[in-house]
Length: 231
Image (cartoon, rainbow, N blue to C red; front, side, top):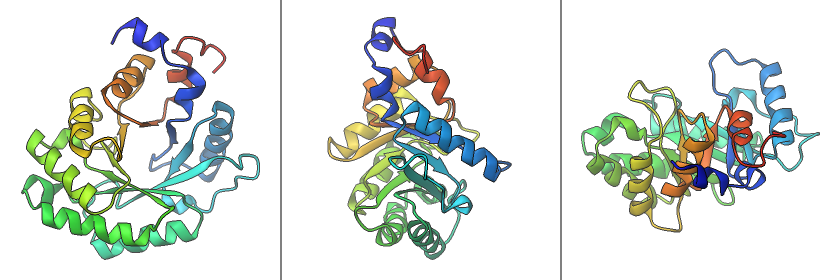
């Protein structure tokens, strides 16, 4: 990643592509309240939290969208359970749902099962709700990434997303994002998440085709951009 690429990013514009994220198992209600305040100050697109924190108090941040995870982090939940979790989240004020696929089904090449799992959650998140599909790209080979992305598109997903950030195989990579973008085409979003800690990381992933970033170190990333000293 070159300095020029980092310098070309505008911090305020990048912030509007960020899901400001807190998914730590030990997170408290106070931590999430602080996340909302910080997200509003940074000008991010959304906050991404665990569904047990819903509904969020957005009195001081009325323009902030709310994303929640579903079937997180293993994806080894029955599709009916994932759909019920997603439906409840939508009822409690979520705008977007980030679901985890059955990673084992993808590794086994059972993309029909992957598509059915995604479709079940899609039915519980009708438009204008947004469905993002976490594929755990670091745990998959290229053929599996392509197969899962095709299944996500066929099931009506709005985004494919690289990672939970909790898998030992790792998080987002430029290669995975490039492959995901090439597979889903220009009309489906690509979210990069997991291990994005610097402005250079963010710039590289956006250049590779990401249209949304999941960040927990949002302030640090924005501060590393040209003109971002005030973040």
